[in-house]
Image (tube, rainbow, N blue to C red):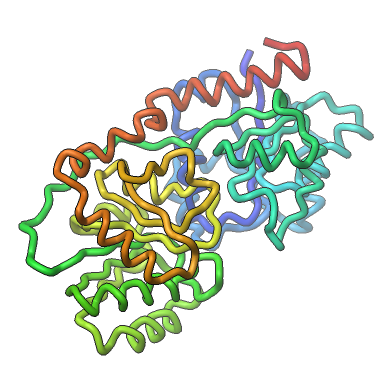
Length: 357
């Protein structure tokens, strides 16, 4: 008999890395063979077309009316084996329903951003989950600091597909092609002001093509900011807007640059590496599972423009053998085994927490 799983995912935009992982799970024939999956959305995605274009739309519950009552209805009036919560407070709500209404489902957290230090969430609610799915080893350590036992945590790295490598253009002397994919916001999380400062520093010595894929509610302000900062330098900026398949529109680029002050798994970074593109990123704990300096990229402290510049110049000097083997550094992440890892993690918690196989 198939186990019934509800995945409750708040605050999805329809454009992020979490959505890509949900796509993979719901489209996996092997996972759907084992589990009856339903996606529960307490908030309507900003990019609603994301749902319209998905074949699993009929397996999605969209909020109608009061948000809390909608969530409670999903938990109370259905026979569920597993509730997977993508937000900490949802773990508390599911736990209380289970406790006071004598429900027998297990509650799993599955957080796609750093557990500690985030102003928009209270990690104490994670203690109400029976078990935890995490997307990197750093989150394991963060959960342990909250008093959560390691045997109640399972690491499932986000799925990454091996990709066809784009052929490198004929290298133009003194030209660097830099890529960025992500939300366009002026705030500290994406820290794009540092990205533009790094580009300006490089442009003192080199010609730069900056290729940017993404959108946000501050598009026009960000473009004005970038154009004003870089107008005196030999920099050509190509703005592509949001693209469902960003790597299809990007040309071959020499280096991928990320200046965020925090990420969850850093899916866009592994997407770059899988395409044999070296990365230069802020030194984030969340990416240490896969970023290997001198092999697939380099790291720099946040806001240290000169160090970022030197690290970009360093990856441009990778020898041909290193450059041609960047994608191989992710072999442990490629999605050939993701389905099995996900299934085994769910069965692990079912067996440990409910005595079921």
